[in-house]
Amino acid sequence: MIGGFGIWELLIILVIVLVIFGAKKLPEIGGGIGQAISNFKKASSEPEEIDVTPKADKEEKKEE
Image (cartoon, rainbow, N blue to C red; front, side):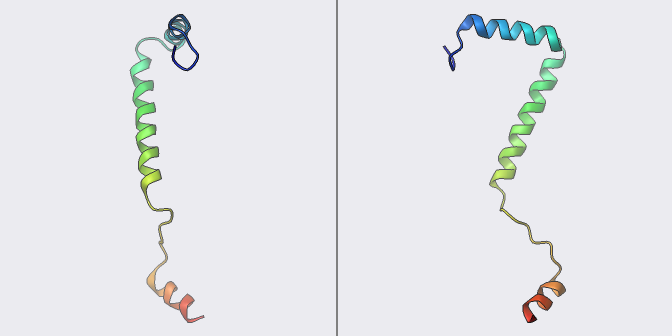
């Protein structure tokens, strides 16, 4: 059992997905999901903020 689903439940879900999307679309869907996960991991490891303020504006704000 995987996450409360038995082998028969997983097979039924797989058959339903194959009927809805077709065998040709499944690799595209899998690739899209994989790329989305990798983009999410990359985005979550980047710094929180990126400062794009020009240097002149930064200096003016410091003087105030």
